[in-house]
Amino acid sequence: MVKELEELHEQIRQCQKCELYKGTTHAVPGEGPHDADIMFIGEAPGFHEDQQSRPFVGAAGQFLESLLASINLSREDVFITNVVKHRPPNNRDPQTDELRACRPYLDRQIELIKPKMIVTLGRHSMELAWSGARISRIHGTPKKVGDIVYFPMFHPAAALHQPRYRSLIEEDMKKIPQVLANLTDIDEEDADPSAEQLSLF
Ligand code: URA
Image (tube, rainbow, N blue to C red; front, side):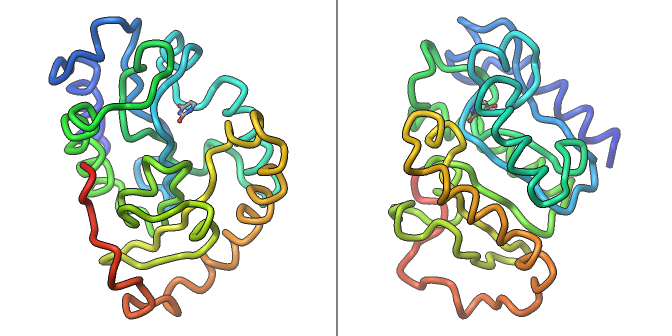
């Protein structure tokens, strides 16, 4: 598995499936234990991530690290990645064709790592399990899809730009240990049947 994940990450580094690679310094495949129980999925690399080829190393990353510390985790305990592996120009939102082109990499990472829980950060990764949902309505509410419990949170950058999100993000993060301890209590019947999976990308 470690070798397969490393090979996948090498493919991501060479990827030219969409135009995004053109303006970038590095791809950012993601990092963390190959058998992590929890995977955090953000949106796309920003300036610092592109420079260092590591996810969440800028201001949003520092906040994410402090959120992890609040539940006694460090970034080395979890796998951290993004829905898009190259930085979009000027940090614009990833476009549908870019999300679609990158999606197989994320699917394969999930398949290889087999996390018990996926924490989505922001609305782009929320789409993995809640298509078309409003993040302000569903944040902090777990949902099981297949064998994995998804847990949607606001993006940490949202708290940096809009301080009113800060306490919401902090509260949601503090729910994670309990969700993780009670994974088997969450069944798929609890899932919102109107939420079609995977429609955006
Ligand atoms: N924001 C993201 O969504 N991902 C990163 O890696 C950094 C900032």
